Length: 226
Ligand code: NI
Ligand code: MN
Image 1: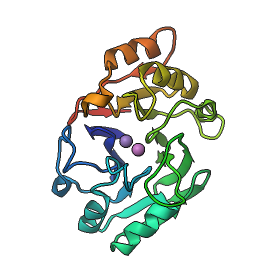
Image 2: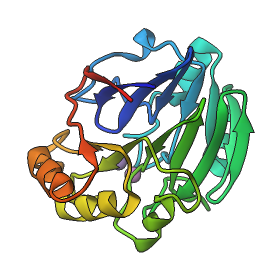
Image 3: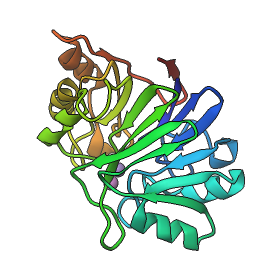
């Protein structure tokens, strides 16, 4: 499984030829390492979005339509994207569904979403036996412990927000990482704007000290493999 950080909370994931983008936000993203027209994917995953949260879905419909890709998101956002002409599969927090590449589980996130009646989610995507957990935007909450081998096998690769203000800060995210205990964790959702400045090296120290979790700090445009 290969992961490319596209900036902010946007990730490109590729495994055995299946290509996916998570929380596509590129055109108005000051960190973006690519533009929507440079994205070639089969799936578009969206944790949450809409008013106040377009830093997670601004380019979802454009990328989906250009690629004839399937958007996988929550029910209410999915209805909105379908009305805009995208192909959509709608899920909801707590739901797990099989896909040709493996399975997807929508999990809780302590956050909001900009669509009436909607919930923010985190997403666990199992691609050919390797799991990627995208936490979306979330504050710290103790049910994150369910991700440490309880509802899914141990997560291979996780992306956690560390920027504070809207989400967990470095201290909270380091605690979350220890609760989730992924093999590899990557910080996201920081340094995009002044309100979410954070020290990723401090996050790395806090997580790695006395644990078997590896922190990989990727700059936008960088790639890693698990
Ligand atoms: Ni948000
Ligand atoms: Mn956000």
